[in-house]
Length: 123
Image (cartoon, rainbow, N blue to C red; front, side, top):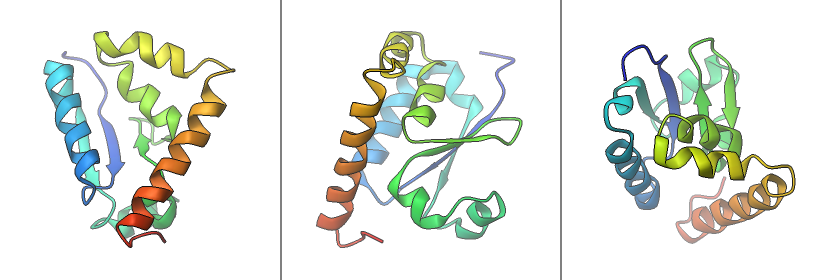
């Protein structure tokens, strides 16, 4: 999809599930995948700090930087990504609903903490 601004996605590339989700996103996004730059939070600590993101927070939650330098995290980051993929747009809308978003945010934070604790990487 020509004309899409680049999104920079700060994600945990040491997480097998995260890598699998990235690959699935790239397949589903088609041409729009070219407008997404994937950055491993485990190897770009200084880059995160330069953007005002605590590396620990980046490990605990997905962060996405838009073309204007604004950074969204957690479900807001997922919503930015999903809106670029036609088949995911309805899910992005659903996740953003006021009654749904807080519950999913809680579940997401809990899942990430458990995953990192199991891997011995909980900061």
